[in-house]
Length: 302
Image 1 (spheres, rainbow, N blue to C red):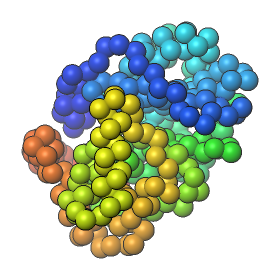
Image 2: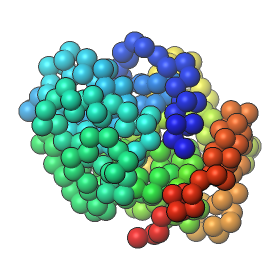
Image 3: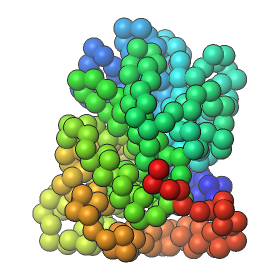
């Protein structure tokens, strides 16, 4: 299933290293945004005191190694939000290049994720590079999807393909009820939490939100801001949880406890909102039809 998805994601993949600094760096940590493939984001979280770093979803390992070398920091861990190859594809090379590297994944995705050295559970905390991360299971896009919360004065949520700016991930291995539960869990984090998602989908997500509320002035303003950033080739991430609670139709719906049927319709509308989205949806529907039911069954809420 992820091979189909990764093929679409790989179209037009950039080759040059681009790096964007996240404003508001503290003495505790610095975060670098590294675009990858056609619209993925990798992240490098650096402890400036120890000169060590943690990479999140480093699909293009060469870029991460190049960045670490240029910054003179040691990569000590990789956090993998889910097994899809456009997120975990760089794990094996990094593990081969850096003996002793910790590669972390959720326990239900670990068997499908390359080079894993540590499986983590919901609520577990782990410390790498002197930085503490809380692990939150957020299944639905994959049954073992996990999000990582960087703790501290300026918290950050690395949420892969569960929560996007103004959107959420496809229900590839779960149900509407499961996505609602995952989003509701994330909504309980502090409102100032910065959202670092796995893809640059913001403009399309806000356009879909606008189709639901065409007269919403907040959506109009944020769509214009996102388009202006993308015209300058600047990431629209991070947003904050407070902003997502204002403009994200999926997060808002989860907090309002809409029915599973309505949540499913909301996501299906986004799946088919564009021609490319419809093509991907069609391919996934055909793939799912021929899958072994045991392999494609949705995970339980546990």
